Amino acid sequence: MLKVLGKSPSINVRKVLWLLDELSLSYEQEQYGSGFKPTDTPEFKAMNPNATVPVLIDDDLVLWESNTICRYLAGRERRFDLLPSSPRERALVEKWMDWQATELNNSWRYAFMGLVRHSAQHADQAAIEASIAGWNRHMRIVEGQLSHTRAYMAGEAFTLADIVIGLSTHRWFMTPMPRPELPSLQAYYDRLSERAGYQRHGRNGTP
Image (cartoon, rainbow, N blue to C red; front, top):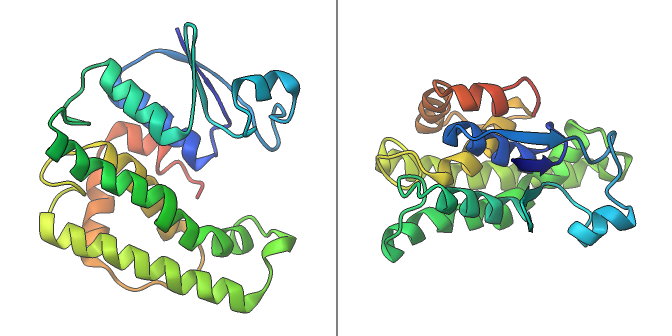
């Protein structure tokens, strides 16, 4: 059976849990990370030298990096609706996955840590405001894409791009900060909320 190592509140762990739900796959989960089992032990670092979650174990295969895990699972199950086999169509999905992991995540990190996690290391108000501005600018990029597709991030169909962007969208709506009205994004959020997996692992009451 598949095993997921990582705490449920983690946005990156939730990517994997939501996808497993979409794939109707059984799995075991062990709660690792801050507040749970430690990741800085020799045993955990032997699986992931970065000491981060999630980690996926599939028999003798050990994987880390949430987007890589999602790609693996979709490919393992031959779910070409979620991750197309065509290089062109696949690239249209993966560009949003990579953008979320680099550009979008970096924009919200300081504001989220200061406003939601109340981290003492993220208390500079000017830095929080700059992060909010950057975060809102990136979400306007999402708004523009959704205004074009009128459905999902890569087009008319739900894909892996929506799992990663959907979780970031929930975080944006749930963080106590000023944000612009983005109607296409709101409609997208409501559309995703019709999916049982998103209800369980995306809109589960925590940012």
